[in-house]
Image (cartoon, rainbow, N blue to C red; front, side, top):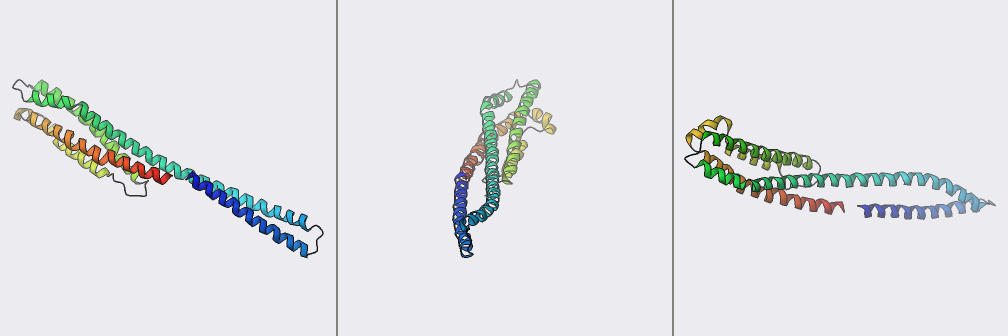
Length: 229
């Protein structure tokens, strides 16, 4: 885009010089045939008046082009900033999932044990809710940034905040709900709830973050950088 602005300015200057040349010749001829003894001087004086006005208009036009170019470049920078934030949040989510694999596997194993008691169950569900809270936090940030980005780009994004919201709802559904807190423990299927949550988080959501969010961010960033040039 910077090169385009330079080309526009060079073209403007070239056109002005050509126009000024013909104006000079035209004015000189007028004064010459009017039998003016100072034809050249008078033509240059007249030319100076024309040039002053044209220079003012040209300066204003160039300033407008530069301002428009700055706004154009700034818009692309904002778009890239949103994409970077979306990608960073997706990477953080995948990191959270990776770092808690052992927690889930151990929790599934412990909850299957005959010695698994209510105290252990309470601590396990509390830890689970903390992890779940972090996942929802970063996921909602992704949704918010996708919606903001969609209003700025003039091409179809391969990112859909609705898809992320659907995953959040699915994750909520397999989580241990407050109203079933006691029934899960008393029914002895705590391990099954945690196993379902772990499987969805580790395989479904983890793969979704890479295939639909991170890869899409890379493609969209490339398109924006190409358009910025």
